[in-house]
Length: 102
Image 1 (tube, one colour):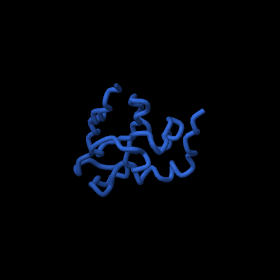
Image 2 (spheres, helix red, strand yellow):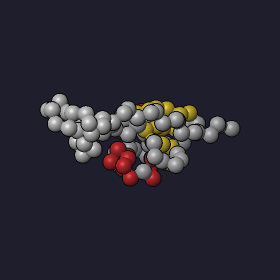
Image 3 (cartoon, helix red, strand yellow):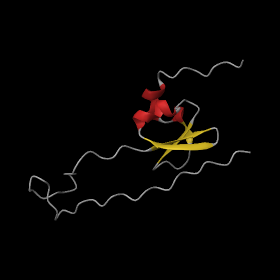
C-alpha cells in the first residue's frame, strides 16, 4: 500500500518592507508599491505515490504533469487531480491521453 501524500510544510515568507522603508527611487514603500512581482506558486506533483517538487508552473509539463497526476500548492486543502485545477488547464490542453495497455 502506498503511503498517503502529505502537503509539504510551507516555507516562511520573507519579510515585507514596512511603510517606513523606501524604494530605490527614494519614495516610501507601501502595500500597493511592492518591490517586484509576487513569487510564482510552487507546485508539487504526486506521481506513483511519490511526492515531487517544488516546481514553478512552467516546469510542470517536463516534470510529468498529466490530467490524472495529483497536484498540490500552498493554499490548497488537499491533493487533487491536475484536471480539476483551472489554473493548469492551459498546460493540460496539449497533453496526449495515456497509452492503451500493451
